[in-house]
Length: 103
Image (cartoon, rainbow, N blue to C red; front, side):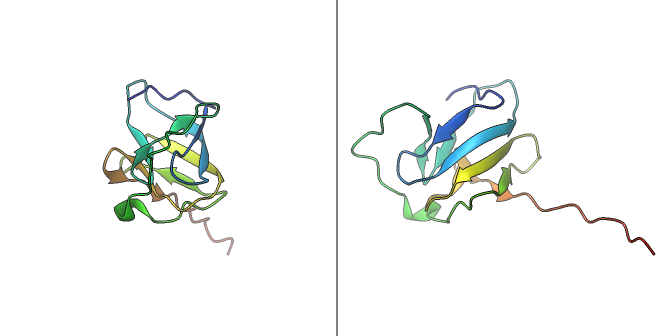
């Protein structure tokens, strides 16, 4: 578990996914991708890491991912095969807000 910092970049240990932190909370979190903890941008990946089939939903480049209460927001800067999660809870794609009609 680590405390995420705004603007920090992380990468997956099990696929090509890379993310950047857009919004976070000042408490330790277990940020995962593909069922394995995410690494810092320059950390070496463990050789035994493998993609968990339960977390094999693709992470899409350019999409923002949020937790259920919309306090954590991550931007996918490089897509991959693993799903982003906080522990065992998958993050969901942030939907665009509807604009009011212009009549």
